[in-house]
Image (tube, rainbow, N blue to C red; front, side):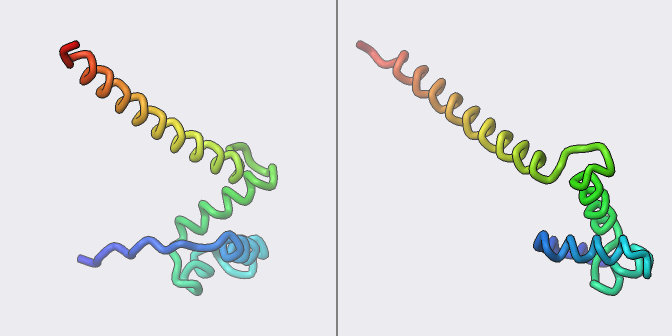
Length: 97
């Protein structure tokens, strides 16, 4: 059985270049993916996201997705803070006066 390929980071510029190559229509998405040692699935996702960002398709834009991710991180941090404060409050409440 083949090992899964490690996750590789790609710059926004690289993704935009791949999307532009796909939009030209000279080669199929699969062929472009193969030429750049990629799989077709993320390339198709990049194309879809580029269409959303351009207003050609419904969905959350890249900046909206970034904002949502930031809010989720902040929400998680605040929940952790509240949990710590609850534990400290319980601890102080148990101490004799």
